[in-house]
Amino acid sequence: MNFEFTEEQKLFAEGVRKLGRAHLEKDALERAHDPRFPFEVARLMHAQGLMGITIPEADGGVGGTLMDAVIAIEQVAAVCPRSADVVQFGNFGPIRTFAEYATPAQKMRWLGDLLAGNTVISLGMTEPEAGSAVTDLVTSARADGSQLVINGTKVFSTFSPDAAIFLVYVRYGPGLGGIGSVIVERGTPGFTIGPPSRFMSGEEWSELHFENCRVPAENVLLGPGGFKKQIASFNVERLGNSARALALGRYAYDKARDYAATRRQFGRPLCEFQGLQWKFAEMAIKLEGAQLLLYRAASNADRALPSAYETAVAKAACNQVGFELAHEAVQTMGALGYSTDTLVEYCMRRCRGWMIAGGSIEMLKNRIAEHVFDRRFDQRPPKAQAAE
Ligand SMILES: Cc1cc2nc3c(=O)[nH]c(=O)nc-3n(C[C@H](O)[C@H](O)[C@H](O)COP(=O)(O)OP(=O)(O)OC[C@H]3O[C@@H](n4cnc5c(N)ncnc54)[C@H](O)[C@@H]3O)c2cc1C
Image 1 (cartoon, rainbow, N blue to C red):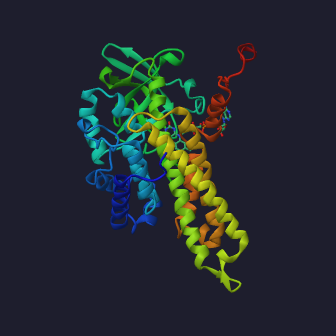
Image 2: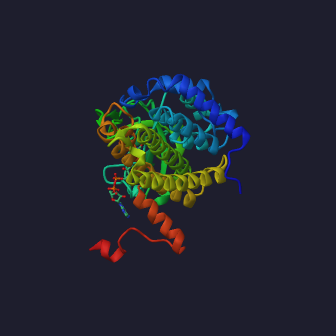
Image 3: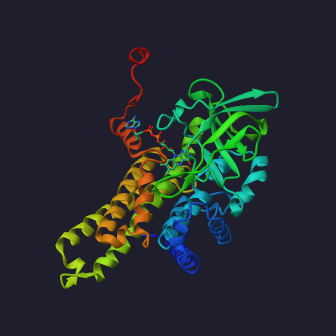
């Protein structure tokens, strides 16, 4: 067991940090308050080999490991928290599911522009009546000759106001086996994108409406029975979510530590008050623990898909710790921490969302409990009760 980065990983981390300092740090505050996708950052990342890190070179990626992608998120977030979303987009989000399962023709058509930072993809999974219970989704895809006809509504899709293409979870038929996914392009007749709403983080999302929306059968990403594959690759998205949560928590923690070391009240620096020392000691313990869980899940996965259990443990820990650290950082920095002139309050708002997105902490704990007891706990009411 080795708790150190390899020489290669150290060099990679230093290189990414240097790039971030040179190109991203200056506008970090402004970028955090801009709800739209930062395409200029995506193009910069592409030029520097930070898009498609885990995607094979033959598909236009870098052919690296999931651990490299986690390192990239951490180093970018350390200087510009908002830009870490671009590393997520280019390596962990729906792009990764797409790259895993797309046909050569689909990759040829869409992957190049996504990796180059020219376009962005959004995930249409959640529906008004299917949140945590994602398999309750009702958006339908019915075959009609060489086309699919899609009907339904999706909500909360990240990057939806900017996305050129959407990876949409659909139902081809009843039950778990009836679920799969299709790619729908912005501008397809029958597909309307509602006006943007805002999350607490400032990010925007739009409702997606499909009304007899026709797409060619070549747009099928995964046919009936594809749900388990989608969720397996969604574990990658969860790790990116975990990495960002912890990295933003660390960002806020670092700012608060520097503040506590220099800010003087009652004639002495804040860090000389034991109440604050113990707060930081507790934060350090939580930070180190969550960091190891994240690295375990990422390094065990290498290039392939991470284990569902290790991912659930890492995400629950990183989401919780990231938020707690940012929350305590706001408190430590007083009114300055609560002000939008610093990024600490942004980190807190941002981390709060990841406790809900991509598998809420409660749903992850359900998954972990199943591992603990080595049995499945059905979340649905017993059939007789449900029928009442
Ligand atoms: C920042 C952000 C980004 C998002 N991005 C996307 C995206 O890109 N694409 C997309 O499709 N969706 C996205 N979502 C939606 C996200 O997937 C859902 O919010 C999530 O699945 C939870 O669904 P819900 O909000 O409907 O809550 P509900 O499912 O209604 O749950 C409400 C509460 O009850 C708890 N709960 C539910 N069931 C159980 C249970 N069995 N046991 C214990 N507790 C339970 C939940 O944990 C939650 O706290 C995003 C959400 C956020 C906040």
